[in-house]
Every structure is written in structure tokens, then in C-alpha cells.
Amino acid sequence: MIPLSVLDLVPVRQGGTISAALADAGNLAQVAEEAGYKRFWVAEHHGSPGIAGGATSVVLSHIGHVTSTIRIGSGGIMLPNHNPFVIAEQFGTLDALFPGRVDLGLGRAPGAGPILGQALRKDLGRAAEYFPQDVVELRALLTGDIDLPISATPGLGAAVQLWMLGSSLFGAQLAAQLGLPYAFASHFSPDHLDAALQTYRSQFRPSEALEKPHVMAAMTVICGETDADGELLASSQDQAFVALRSGDPGPLPPPVPGYRASLNMSAQGTLGRLGSARAVGSPRSVAERIARFVERTQADEIIVSGATFDPLARQESLRLTMQAVQG
Image 1 (tube, one colour):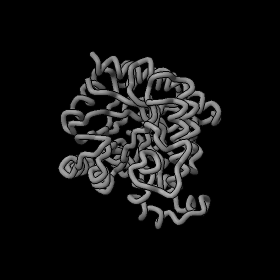
Image 2 (spheres, one colour):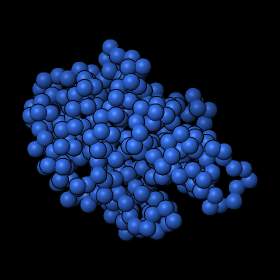
Image 3 (cartoon, one colour):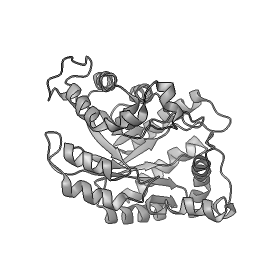
Image 4 (spheres, one colour):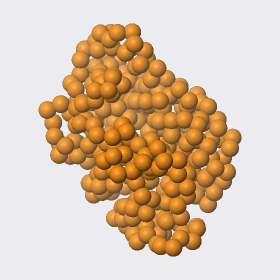
């Protein structure tokens, strides 16, 4: 059976609070661990009233303390927002707290609009240009493979597993060049998936961390008792995505029956292009769609995303999905 992992944005639901969102994330991680998921990743997003995972390393500390065996990590840290030395200290600390359980997925996108650069006091465009060099520096701060004038403590010697994240060919090429495992954000940007995986595999150079290419692909996965149940649960995620693409993000809304059918053609097209990396419906439908996706991509792992308005429904979705794939 292909390993399954979980990607969580720590969604803030309409009428809910950030405290509740963080508690829900911890509960979800416990369910994922019990169900047999391999990793629980949290994504860095900023400036959205519907996402509470911006301080990613702090959230991961919370997740680590309420779990005991599941790997925890970033999906990802947007490195242009940060100083590599600070990230080395943060994830070195996480490794000291939760030895052998920490993943550090790195991305190049800022995770918010241009105003984020002002808030961070950084020129994000210029910082993104230095992304490859910053990745190499961060790896050196953790591994010591390059002599640097200062050591990160915590950080140096930490057994943190580095990952490259991406939704284009750039991340695939860099992951291949550095010999890192590669995670593709196909759950929200599937257009370049096949080309990126071909590029990564064909250009891969073995490293001390990884002997051969290793791919994790993301899917939106929401499982209910029936196909209709799954689609209804997924309508909250659909609404959130349409709102984001319309420039009006907000807290996660409650489900709406027949939501997709109520949309204009443009919005339906926006959601429709995500269908190639989407498994929503009954356990049987979800298992079949995941199997077809794995056959097409030859992914080594799948990471499942997708929020529901009722946090208990997301927990049950994880249980049903794992049971369906195992079955």
C-alpha cells in the first residue's frame, strides 16, 4: 500500500476561533497517527483570516506534543520570507523535542500578496532569486557539509529530513540537482505535474540524503459514506478556493448542497481543472481515484489535503480514506 500523509492548513471556520483551529489540528493529527498516516504537515500561509498556520514551527511544536510517532513537518516553510539561520534554529529545536520525526519542506512562493514583504521588511522578489543559495546554506547549517562562520545551536547535527516543494519545473530541477525528495502541490496546481515529475526523475543526482528520486504528490481527498456525502462535505473547500481565486479569502464556510452547479462557467472551470488530483466521494470512489492517480504519477507517497467545516467530518474522512486504500 502506498504511504499516505496529511497536509493541514489549520483552517479557521466561520464563527470559530484561532484557538479552536489549533485544537482541531492537534485532534486531527492524533487521528492521523492512530489511522496509520506517515506524516502530518502544516503549510505556511499569511494574511488570511481563514488559515491559522502562519507560525508554522510553533504549530508543529503543538502537533508534536499531542502525538508520539507520526512525522511532523512543514508543507512548507516559504524560505524567501525567512533567514535560513533562524529556520535552522527553529527546526533544530523541533528535532531536539521530537527526535527523528521532523520534516522540513521548503517552498519559494511567499504565501501571501506583495504587502507581506512590507510586513516582513523584506524584498521578497529579490529574496526569491536567492532561494537556491538559501536552501544550500540552510542544509549546511543543519548538516555541516559546508564550513560556515557560525553554527546554529540548536540546528547543527539535527536529523531533519529536507524536502523540496513545488508547483512548477523550477522546484523539480532544484530538488533533482540537490538530491532531495520532492513534493508537488498538485492539489491546487496540477497543470505542470507530469512535466515536473519527469524533469525531477530524469535530472536527479544522488546525494548523501537520498540515493534515488522520491516523489510525494498532493491530492484533495474528502471521504464520506456516499458520493453525495463526500461532495457536500467538499463544498466548504470549494467555496474557500473560489473565494481565494476571487481575491476575497475568509474563514471556512459551512457546506452548501449543489454548490458547484450554482456557479457560473468561469468558477466551474476554475474548480474543474483541479479534478485530476481530487478524490471526493464514497470510500470506494476515493480508493479508485487515488489508485488511478498513483498509477499515472508513479508517486512514492500521497499527501491528502482538504478541509471540512465540521472538524469531526475531516477526522472521519481520514479514517475512511485509510480503510478504503488498505482494503
